[in-house]
Image 1 (tube, helix red, strand yellow):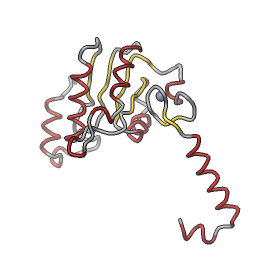
Image 2 (cartoon, protein in one colour):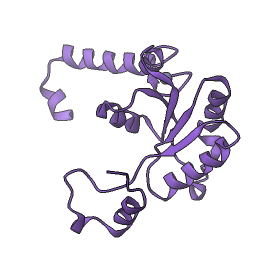
Image 3 (cartoon, helix red, strand yellow):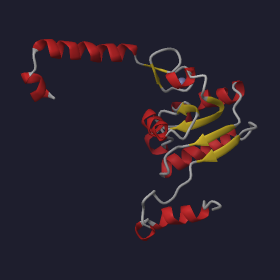
Image 4 (cartoon, helix red, strand yellow):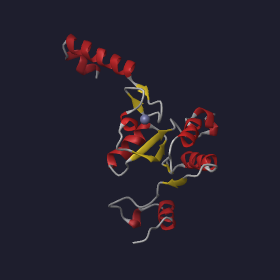
Length: 171
Ligand SMILES: [Zn+2]
């Protein structure tokens, strides 16, 4: 980037600096789901076509974008902004967990999809959320783990293969 700017006209770098400044100033978190937003609520929360009965819980905004790109999910999101990590001192109070609990109290939610990462901390976060959300009358689901599309069983690691056997679906 430095080399590119070295040869670009001053007007270009001025415009770029202004644009970055504007983005930083205008970017905020959605008051409801904590996705990136340019207003009080993000574009997804403002969209009346989204299904308010299903909330997909993700660790960060990049996960939300990845799920959005599938086009397979029409509900709302809740971004935790991290995963539980006791070794790094990240407890439930550092994530947007209380805010999720309040949403279950105030919104017509019927299902919560726990889409945290399938690593140790992501799984611990999902288990914590499962316990925390139990008092509410909602269905709690977790993303399936399995063989990648176009994959080859022979090369799938044993943990993933084991998980995909356990989570097999009717054909
Ligand atoms: Zn939102």
